Image (cartoon, rainbow, N blue to C red):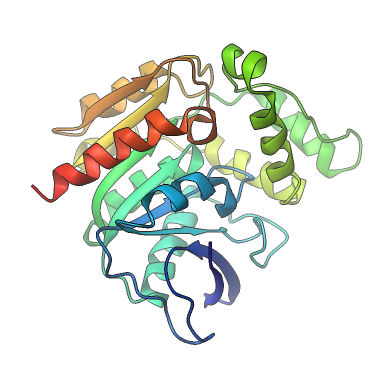
Length: 272
């Protein structure tokens, strides 16, 4: 899976893609199939999409970036708001000379994708919204716990929160993989991301979205619930909703066959 850096608004921005490598200042070829931009969740990074890059790279042009401060991209703090992240994603597309793409966002990335479709509609061919919400249910206790970690008052939490009970029982390696992805990003970034998410409310605005949309949720997700997915799908005209059994908040690695199949079917429908 090739990787590359590009400068976006002064941030050295790391991204993953599929296909032939190119010289440092030459953008890769994204002409194969559909351009699909994967936007990760809070405190995460682009490598979390490796199963999807591998699955779609033969037929399409998948791209997964590390947002500022995440993974290998520059910065020690996240951006202040979800809207700031959406503006950054638009600038990232500019640097790659991509006019529009299918935007696939997970959790916070889904909120970024929705805001992008609202304020930068021309950059969005279609939306795939994964385990997300127009208004996140984030408690003050959760924010304070993350703040304590940034101040050295508590260790990072490594738990099974967000995973389906079946995943925890039958495929614990997936949980361990999630922990390894978690430590690639500074806890301060996870904290600022969660604060940004807590301030977001797109419940009224998403009715303005006029793009083909697929909304995916895990049946066992207690954070961004199936009800959240159904609410979004009900607000976006023509959107479809897919609930995946035995999956929690981390469907891309918990249930990749079902997740990827739903995405492939939706992307195929755009061309027909």
